[in-house]
Image (cartoon, rainbow, N blue to C red; front, side):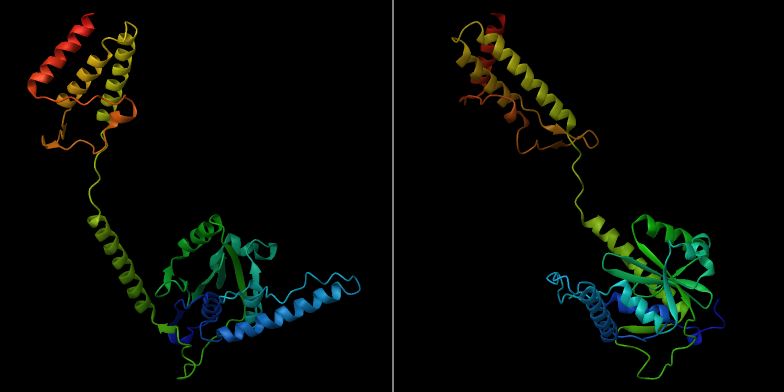
Length: 322
């Protein structure tokens, strides 16, 4: 357990810079700007050299050296570091990094509150959860400030991370008690010192801004047009009825086909209903693309006004009587 307040009760937090989350993670575990990206890159280079040497020794005399490359397995081209690099960095301060699922970390699985720090990793992102002056904080560099975690929420949060596939490591050892706050050591360009109340105020402000932005986006979205399922069902029924009628008439000969198609076209043209909004009783425009076009044969164009429509309806009646 930790002793008295460290760093005068202040919290050290680093905001994300490029893909240097591993650097931010190590420094927030230590609560100070102890490492730069160049320090971790030097550790990664040393690890690569040792691993390369071990592979050379293991393949000596076999003549199978073709698989050996100069590619680094501990640092990527965009600045991401391996867990081995983080372990080496923390070993400098007599700290151990232990997988949370290992048997030695079993007490932390039961009661994480008894520990002091956790490192979390998924894909190419690292962040730490750290107890500072008796309180737990999430020092994710994607956050503008450390986020306070209650003791109850700590366990639930770790379980949630594990459920989403995050790898979690326990950090044990002698954590630095103080970070000298001289002008040249207080920050590395992306670090900041915050009082707990300042961190809480920043987090609340960010959360409030996100809620307002979400509400504004919802207001800007146009209202969704309710689906016209009844119209679709009606059109489908009409189309099926027309197919059946056309089939029955077709069996009696081809003499009336042209007249029937003309009558159908005129009837559809004159009787196409407007969609009525039942809530407002206001007529709305029908869909731009007619639903019937996929299920009915093309209608023959019909010219004329009301007399032509009446004549066509009479033809339909006559044909049905036949």
